[in-house]
Length: 138
Image (cartoon, rainbow, N blue to C red; front, side):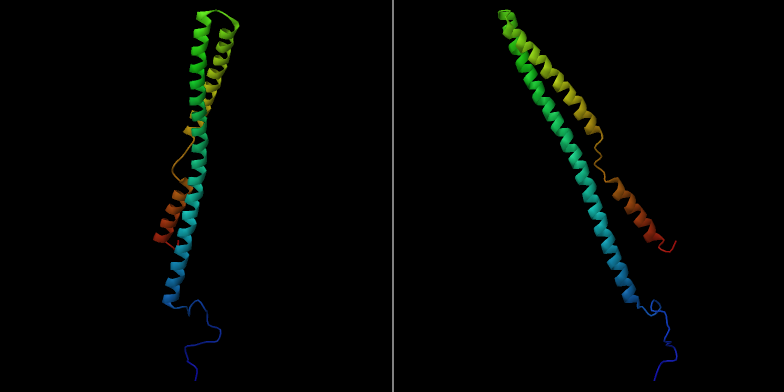
């Protein structure tokens, strides 16, 4: 005998149990959380790459500065000791290294200022998710 409350064309959503609905919400929240974690990882990876490049430029600037000091010191020694072509050659090379070091330093510092350690997109979507959880129907 069939139930008088059961219709053959009944809405399947209306027949879904509370447990199933809670399970679906739990699965959706788990998937949402995993997606947010993946987004945060991608943003952090991107910012770490920018920081690495900036650090490399600053390292290059430090090395160039070291070479500039070394070569300029040799140039001063040779230039003052006996004014010959070698001393002036060291001076020219030292000035070139100083210029390279200055350019690398300025570019590295500029790149370092653009690094953002906060995953902004993830923070925004988490705020949106929290707002949705407060009012899921609106």
